[in-house]
Length: 276
Image (tube, rainbow, N blue to C red; front, top):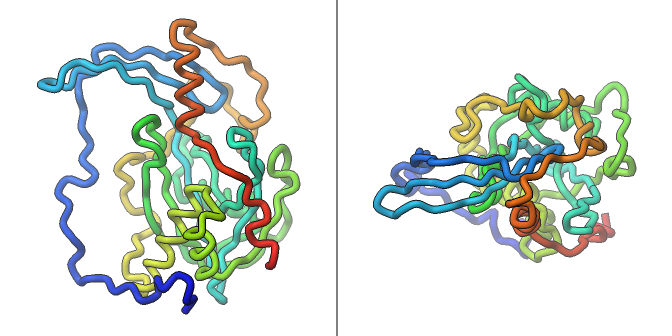
């Protein structure tokens, strides 16, 4: 056990606390919905919503296709992590393999398998759902599913990476050390934070909390392709697309501010695992 974290001592009750209606999908009356900003990957919607007794409110939010991430755990209980430049926070972040649900009709599991091969040159024989979460529900509808991938082996050929992924490095970090690094604040990418803590908790429960790889996903029951106003891009091509976005002038500045606030800020943690 890693004495820094102590999380291997977690004991799960046989019957977890009951949280009625979680998640409870509520469908208020949308009086008006306007596309305030249309980008290559993300949109910003401006909705007027009738909440009944709570009144009518105006809300802007980032429209997101959804994403998947993968905790790839080897036989030594090490996790594959990758480094990637993230421009909104001007940082090179340590992450786990992940990607958008940006291929129309592609199931979430297939997207995860594709991303693991493309970003880490790995194939996994055993897949489970580790955890689902909403990355920033106050300002975005992004839903992210984290898979646990085990029984790993390398792909037969290395994937050709470009743009921010061109110099991507893959490192193997013991799960306990990864959790300690997360809790120390040295790694802040949400997929790593949620994935590492969920994997540690699931292991402490002897993996009994894992769900089938095709488990129902309430906020993304089907993979959601990019909106129809965009070109049908191949995987990863939206990063380098040069299509100018269409902007509703009345909402442009608010939309840009919302995107910045939603994505948040972070400091570089490029050297988080320099000792490995």
